[in-house]
Image (cartoon, rainbow, N blue to C red):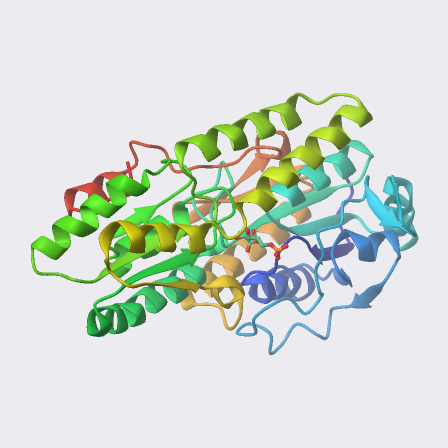
Length: 374
Ligand code: F6P
């Protein structure tokens, strides 16, 4: 591709600390270092479909420490947009907006879903690169994703604070932590905060094993416990039902099969709602210790990014501008050690990085006596 002169930026998926730092990183490098023009699109891919944009060249200062995304975000997919109650493929509208703005490249800041949508746009003929953003740390082929470090700080701080109140009241406190279908955030915060029990989606849990571990603590003189549970953690039966629904969705080929599989996965997800409350009630019944629940929720991804995330987002953003200048397209800018590396979107889209069962964090947790629910 000829030297890029005009680039578009959008943020998609759940918001995450560090998005504005990344917009600033790529934007300033593109404008100040490479002399490009930068256009931002509002509310994820929907802004591209509806052609809602803002010139970013003079809006890049003062946003490094700001949480959320100045561009707004959404979970819309260009090929399956909800418009007037109907699902429509709007890829052609995206291509038209790209051409109308005379863009040479588009940068999409997001997680796994964004990588998938970006790959579709590459196949539709656009030059697209992505930057890895998610508090869940579940993107493959990158050492890190911005947002995770901040969420880890917040969740760890919450566990620290829950300790003193659990201790004072001799209670079990079950704290639910985000992470979608991966356990990175719960495991990381659980270890850093010294949770007594850590439950992650990768290790189906037995309520009886957890109650036994809490009982051992009581007999050892600790009549309180902190249970860190990932939002996606399940018992073996629920985990099997969930796996079946996921497998069915992956195998679905026709539009009818896809619709049915999406519906059945949604039903499994909605049956899972309230799981943390049920777990706390079960633990109270089995241990005789009063139990309370804290659901951290969106607090984990709101507010100012940590220095680690600002640094990561800035260096990946600036590396993204370098790649665009070199004419590279169809890649995610992956963090690799202290540097970065372009990884083909085909290797990222549709994949999820779960915690390997032999990961050092799991080993460390077990070695310090943490119950992992199995
Ligand atoms: O992917 C980030 C994340 O915060 C997950 O941890 C969580 O499961 C999900 O987004 C929540 O999504 P939403 O913002 O659509 O409620």
